[in-house]
Length: 216
Image (cartoon, rainbow, N blue to C red; front, side):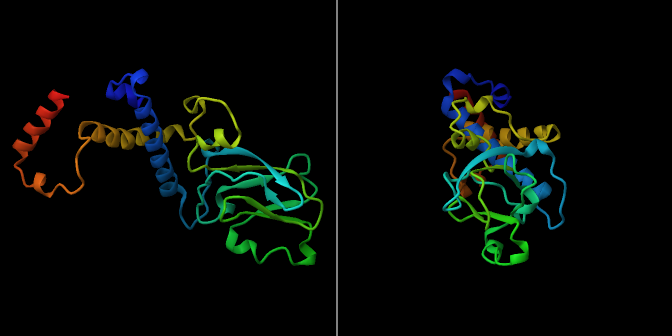
């Protein structure tokens, strides 16, 4: 949709497509944090979530692969759920932040609870006194939605996966991304330190910008 707005040809702009995807990811994360990242627990629609299948080594109690970055809205409990297949009734799985994780798992009366966290190296780490399951499902909000393809070793074009966003936020995201993409495309060499340009009269700046667009 952004390419259409800018009247680009996708066949000749593969790098620009990747750049647009990165911009969409950035502003999607910003919208989510602004809308749901408050101190009050709010319901987050399922449209934002993605599912990760995670294999865990029962001996080390660590995931075999690093996880993609998840958006953490004040605490993992608010934005992420974790389950294990076929053992839903065997024990309770609690996903906590890494700061709290170090103090859990020592109460004998809570031995039926499996605690898990995403450690500093982005591995899933577990604490449990019983038999560990070898696979978990994490249902969370990824910082970069396309990262799920690399994690699942999925040979799919990133543009073919669903973009996890509410339909009501599409127009807002489009406007934010389009403004940045159009600005970069029209002024590719503009320096952030443009004090001298700002001193020019508005008419001269408009004339300069018009001549630049005509030349390109």
